[in-house]
Length: 549
Image (cartoon, rainbow, N blue to C red; front, side, top):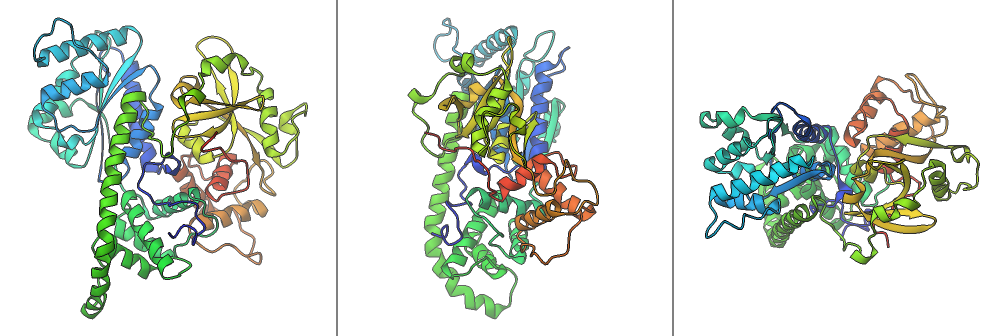
């Protein structure tokens, strides 16, 4: 309803798990690093020191599912994954679910109702065989605060499955803060001692909450200053306590309220009214004012009931989609739109012989997207104002944030590296262009050969001149400050504004943006920072296809 009023192409604050809206704050990245550290430590540990438990806790709506989704997307391809999302199970039911997730079949000798020993024997045989094949295994249990004490004890016993070299099973527990309290009980001390990495996911800070709102609006097509007044943004963080899910609910309702009243932006009073309707709470005010608004609140109840039904239905669909995606592909990226027909998805190994080993060929394939000559001897000198940029250790979520076509370097176990031009990303597929033809491959297959090397063109800001140092001034600094102000929801800088300087204050703003976008937070605005700012503010550059045909 309000999308066209604010120049949006879609609802930016839907609670559906659309990966395009992924926002990784510093806390999210730290939590993800802890999970990946735990798995890496288990996969490479010797002498029996690996394995054990990795613990991720956080309040409802802080983004634990987002972290889990990113975690699953980055698990190595030689790692088996079992995902349990409903842990209210007995010990036999849990073991049965684990075997089903790992696709383990019981021995033909088992007759009648399987026993706990039957399941553990089958699981141990599977883990030993996987270890012998150079593969590792990870068990992820969501909503782990619902585990019964006897089930927790059985999980502890599963970490005893080992060889002389290392543990065979890594267990990741994800849950609400009560999970930490559970593990602090004296009777669970043995399990607590086996936790090798733990992280508690806090809510977003006020600055991160503003960046989160700006990020979601940008993905939804918004350009220009945020349609929220600065006091409204402060109030949103106060009312939501920085919890992303609560921010989505409140911002969506606040935009609807502004649209209904014909307002160009959301004020603090609109936020207060939206909070009363969404959360059922009001800010402190006089008794007369509360009575005056009583009629509005009662009228809003009629609208609130179908909203609650919709949210419950959406949450159930999200849980079902996540479970199905993990069980079938070890990916936690449920599609929002219909996936491409299976017949259109090709095997990357089939395309491999056609991919060039010379990266210059891939640069020439990319050049026309930037209106550059494809016949230039040196593709990186094809035009002034545009430079080649290469990065390493990127991730699929970062590629989505950059939102521009580029070159992926792929490496098999044997043979030379090859280069593929990425031009599109959907929820579970990547689209590559080769000799002007489109080829769609699965992300899960691409991840086996792509290790984070990415190259693309980028447009140098006026006056950039090979990097910006402390005290730099000029058009590039003015552009940088103006775009950061835009992302913060402030007014754009006018042409009459005094020249700006890259000082400590501006570097702090750059550092905050880098934190929010997953860039090394050094406060130095380099190519990656400028490209991310362009992406966040809907700059003019070639974009990735999100629904390639």
